[in-house]
Length: 410
Image (tube, rainbow, N blue to C red):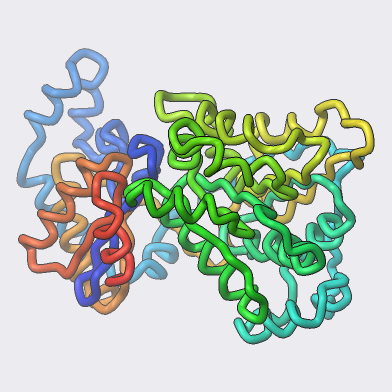
């Protein structure tokens, strides 16, 4: 997950449960730095190993290049104006599905018009959520009708509300335990979903519990045995309870009405040693069969593995799976996000980063630096502290209590 730094305010450095799966925004790939070498170095690339090129780089040229680049760095918006326009990436759109749902486009659509109960509408209004987003318009009515769901929408579009509202509405009609299980790949995301369930259900007496790694299993097992209404969990820790906590603890899971896989593309990713599929399968093994529950999959990126689930045979008595995709064709990037790409020599990466953080346009901003390894996050954390930046880190190698504290400091 990310490693982050903020010169005036603390900023987190974090990575996911799988430290090798995050993208590195702050550190460019080593191969990209070759393009900033001198013309002579470019010619030597075909006949000399990369290590020789790095050793033979002209320090004076690098220093002049650094001054030229840093002089243009004021704020991300300036990067955008100075950058050479690039051709928009070509996106191959999937063939329309016969089960696909088009979200209502009326800007005046309200939660009440989606058949959401008044107490939920008021609860959302108390959270300053007054109009449904596209993914909420498309998914809430169909989930209330009892259909399984595959929902795709960019990050920050309100996917949690899209599945939490219909689950809470159905739970209020039949408040049984355990009513819903939500699986998500990271502890921080599980905590965020837990807090949203608690906030939306504030007028009711919902009992939700959080089952994640990094915490003592005994209190979790006791809470699980007390039949909460909603369980929000990471698959690894819930699988541990299923294997070790005994039937008395997990028997309530056999009557679940709703199963949610949030960030389903991560949960169903079969590549790499950090695949969560074995733990997900362990969790699903004690839940009711798919014909006796509603299954909701939400993701910012609908991968082929996720999309293939809609073509599975329909169980007797079940409605066809519906698919609602909103803005997934735009690479899941919010319109308010400005992007730029700066190529720097790999040997001077930290120098550029330090200078960038000190520019007038960035001195008072909160900044997140994403890394692809926990070791890189730790390295940048210590380096930036030595350079007197206010910085904190967030990654899977930290104890859970420290992760929560560091996130709160940001």
